[in-house]
Length: 288
Image 1 (cartoon, one colour):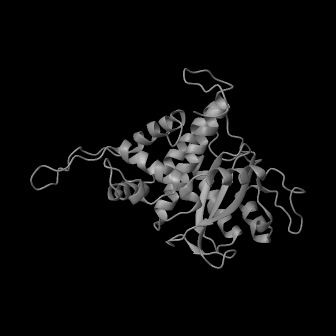
Image 2: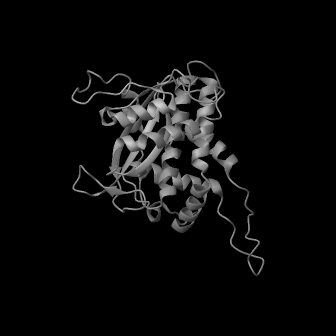
């Protein structure tokens, strides 16, 4: 049984492959002029998807076709090139062309996940006996499509992560026809951002803040923030994001944006199936 539906993974791989640098089949630097054939990128990509979905270590998902060291080397190379970030931006552009991103209302929230191996992004958890954990700050548009994502240690407060999250959001939507956020965009943070510093930041960014007040609990003032909560739930469906064992900061961000790209394509197919017709169009909400 495939880890992800072919209807979902094939368009993701098609765009991912276009972003990869060209590499020769054999290493030209080998002193004898011969070497083992380079493992196909699609094979490595399928193993990385296995790691993303299951959250297993590379030695557990390695097969005779691809070793764990090959997975790690290729993953480090792709993460340094920022391919997952560029992939997510292209998926957002496709969603905007076919469905339309609703950027008038942005929801921002954080989520704490496990990081038992520590690493460059891990920090002591304030809610779980100071165990090593990650905090993920994410923004979504009105329909729940992920936009900007920032990772940090679990001990980081929410409001310092708001500025880099908004910066990543602007970078991800730079190539859209609109060219960026509309002037009337409103940002909906939770009560963790209820401070004068947050309001000053939003004023400097030219955005309107609809900040949840401290002391009032949901659903009284949940507003439109439920979409980002759902977005974090979608992200946590991937085992690698629930329990990240990678220590490299660029690798952590690679997996975050790869998962965001998959979610964006899934939402694109979900919305497009009622507006467009194509040969492999799913007839039910459940992708197969």
